[in-house]
Image (cartoon, rainbow, N blue to C red; front, side, top):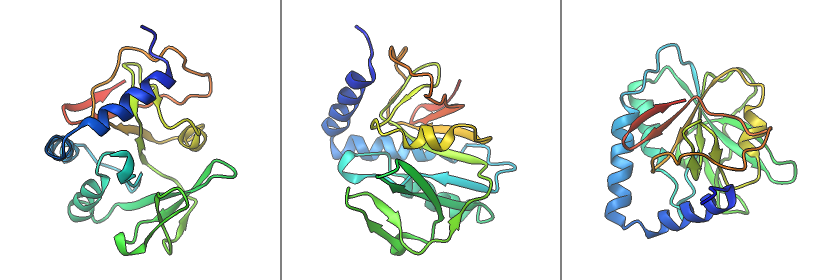
Length: 188
């Protein structure tokens, strides 16, 4: 069976929806445990996505809280999407009180200062990832545009293990350096 982005996208969304509350909580707990073992040496600025609850994305709020507590010297950035241009801006994370839902029900920073400098580490959302480091997102290309030509570490966050190979990788798709899963960090 060919593992196309479309098929993987549908399969991953179904798989997420079928998780019980207990399974979802357990996977996020294991993800946090693996996150705490990540080597943040030399990292000054981290970009991390905020979870879309309706899509049962990994609970990055738990990761952010741990990062704030254990690495208060690291500046945390979160994205704001412009759906007319399919581009993102990056804003300082000021806590959950600064977040507002956009038209697509996605939490975004409201008052967080715009950051246009260097970013050392980007945690990338995905629906599926293959063993080469290529990912399937929601298909709008926000992260591929953002990551193209950027000199930073690119780490996906997934509740599930990688698939063998995505069959329809495009030349503009950006390959990840690693993917954090509840089972551990996979490097590509």
